[in-house]
Image 1 (cartoon, rainbow, N blue to C red):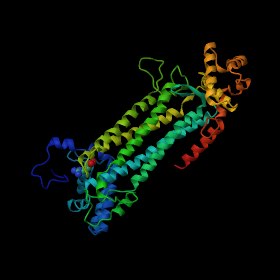
Image 2: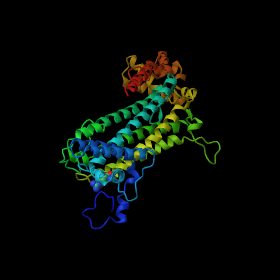
Image 3: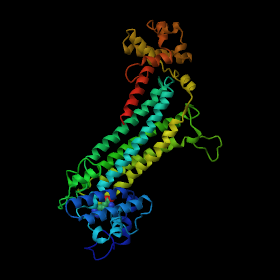
Image 4: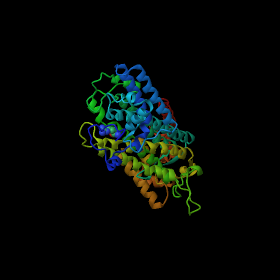
Length: 462
Ligand code: ARG
């Protein structure tokens, strides 16, 4: 068991089956730059505590830098005998600087506090990347909204025609959900930045007089962990990020589902750009929304990563247990998934072409102005319960006559109720309907312009 991190008390080396099960380098090797940064900070802490001579300290830093350069050049690899990234890097460091110096670095630290810290550092970097990619998607949505400010469309509830809305208003609804996701990532980062587990050791802290606060600051954290057991045993930071990733997946899937529906023959709301859609190997006419479908499918995967992780964490006794090695693959996968999915979604959304004439023609269909009739009656002093009944009677009459609300004659309206004077026609246009919903957050064109400005301001803050 040459080169392993443990072995002194063992008479025989690990079985190949154990090694195969235990090995994590195929997924934790990506932590290498963070492990090296942690080792640099730890070497500095050992030096400050008087546990390294300045020449040993300098040799360690030079060795760590050399490993970093080889990693960056793609020339540093773990050996099949390495259990994990931490062990591999210690072995490789010793090859660089010799056992006498390289063997000093492990004093006062454990893989338990190392891995918890490095994992936080890795995830903080990638959460930042995901936030940037999300903001690019939000900008693409906002650009589409800006380009279609006054286009009307059928607004839906239960997927049935409900009330006319502006396309820009509908698109911005997706943007706000994604802005909250960006803010979730920022909140998460503030919480994760609060404490660095380095210095917690295996679980109990260190007796060597090292300064965990200095290590924390060097690694970009605000402070070190106030509790070494919590620092090494907790993974709520992983679960929380996996949740945010799952929520992002769910939000993307809702955009995706609309793109899928909207690009069907029956809806005909949008056409996809050739570069952002796919064909069929047998049907020459096909143009498929594969990006949207993959987004919809990957939401399931992101949710699975979250639930798998929570199941791993459930009922784990304190402090570190090897189960915790299972914490990495799900959330690495979540981050990797979003890093390929988000740019594709941005391109898909940015290049959608809307059939604005069709959207406008469909907007009043399905009696979507019935609420306008009821609210007009309310403004005329009629109680809403009665107004609702009367507007419903108008819809029923239209169904009998196979026509739409604007097609009913004055006499037909008067026959339903004398309260329905010709004045009701003022609200029987889509433009009138949309313009009348002018409270904050409503779909009136002026409000949507304000909303877009508010969104732009909010984005400027990120
Ligand atoms: N590779 C492990 C992990 O990812 C860290 C090693 C801790 N191992 C141990 N026996 N304490 O969780």
